Length: 239
Image (tube, rainbow, N blue to C red; front, side, top):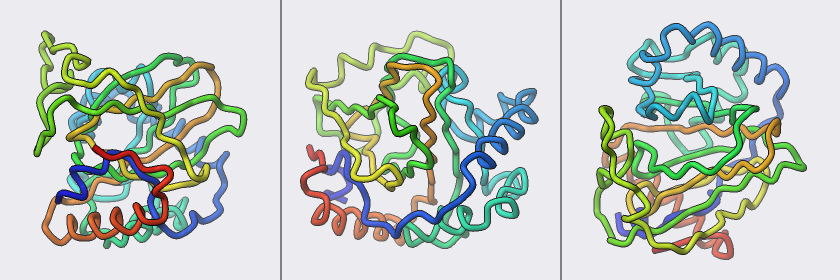
């Protein structure tokens, strides 16, 4: 657990992502997002992301264990990706709780600091424009927490959330990517991260893969992060 708590960001030593039809994925996202727009509250409850979700992203769940597994026939449309989303991290589909694809809203620019609901975050880059200036930034928490602190707006659905910045160190770290198709780990206990978007209409699509938090799963994540720290020591950010 110390490895997972002290590692704040690292690319992950995962198999290469398979080739897939990017335009077809974007079309699936748009179609499925439109279909689910009327029940967006339902989707927020399933993802736990919070009220800012639809401003920054157009989020869709290709998989949610609570809601009968694969959604929108994603696994039929993109079998190569649906297999990769689990196998890349060494998981079985039975160990996955939720997946959330997060395309940046084309109209959005800005920097939004947050801690995601999953303490030990597993992510993949699905698509990024070659000329995009989008960056992932990170700040360390002032305290070395052992569990996720209630400093995010999502803990305060009625408002009155504290300013997250008062809990964070002032130094901003850039999470440098090893490849534009990488998997990566981001810590949501001892760090907060932000997607910095300086130019609208640039594609940047990631996916959150959220497994069940069992001892066996945590052992798998820990082993993956430890192996990745050796390979990507020049990219890793630690506490």
